[in-house]
Length: 121
Image 1 (cartoon, rainbow, N blue to C red):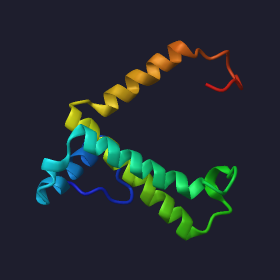
Image 2: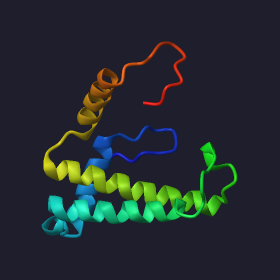
Image 3: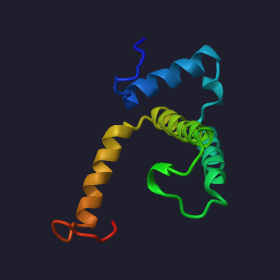
């Protein structure tokens, strides 16, 4: 199996492969129904939300955060991503293609007002 290193790009396919292998090695496939994965994902989103709960607005780049807080945030973001990738795999959805399709649909639904537009989409 390929391992991603510091300079190597991580793909959704690699994450899908890694999460499937991880579950198989532990005999967890039996528990990875779409419903169970969705509920686990929601729980992880809750844990992610707790990190921001009492901080108010935070600056982009989190310049005023302690390094350990950023590491914790990375762990919770990763949990959300990994459950999302696993859920899409179990459901037979190509998440990358679905996401690109959605970006295209959003571009149609929310057309840019012009170069340098400041409207939120």
